[in-house]
Length: 252
Image (cartoon, rainbow, N blue to C red; front, side, top):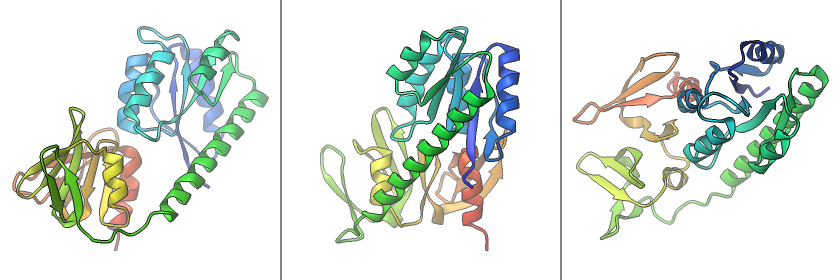
């Protein structure tokens, strides 16, 4: 059974506790820390990268709708699923305008909640099938080298020369032993080109060559860091969602 990492964004303590109670009864749900404001939600999303977010439409400061828009921008091609929670039925239209999976009215009804969970599981299963299909249709390149356009030249680059890559001011910075190559490729596009090789997305913003990881160390709140073998001993973050897969990758 695939685990569903869920996050709650709710400023009302009672409503937050009710949602926690409902989610804790679901055997496939793993709860992430909860947010009480829209700004806090965006920060926690970056750290924990949940699969689904249950969020109140109205919160102090940034609204739930505005928080969703920011998270969608941060999430690249794979944003989380959103479930709006509200005491007012008229907010349902606003939820579906930004493609929320569902909405729940307060106080929560267990039958209605179970219907929402079925929608979440169905949506996650469909997303997983699409990703698998995409992976199966990847074709092997004619050469093992990459052709990187930095705007002034076409750089021929061997994948094993890449230590890591990270977005930087609307560009992608590809770090090698000798230089940093900047191009307009997205991190997802580079990851697709390196499919099947020893590269791992330690965080939404970092793609790392596993062969250059020197050590993995605990950080805070269940997150980790990796230190690379480059001359600067670069330290990069590992998100909570990526931690388990990364550690299992190195198991003997």
